Image (cartoon, rainbow, N blue to C red; front, side):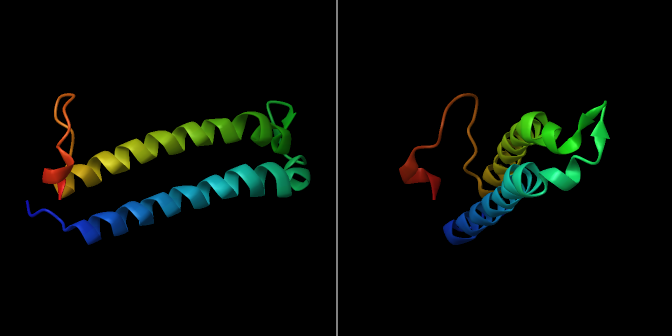
Length: 96
């Protein structure tokens, strides 16, 4: 497999990070703060959804975002040939 160059690697890192930050903003601010009143008309197990999103849902989504970031970056690092091997890292001078 051909390794990607440094510019392509960092463009992909920024693109993936931006995507996850947009999701974080939507869940953390839009659903949990700005749309809390309309969401409160819906119920999850008898609890208003706006309240649930602010208290529990956003935390669960944040944990999933961290997991998604780790998985996405692991795949990107393997594609770029800079992945960690069995607890060791590639020295910066050899990474790119």
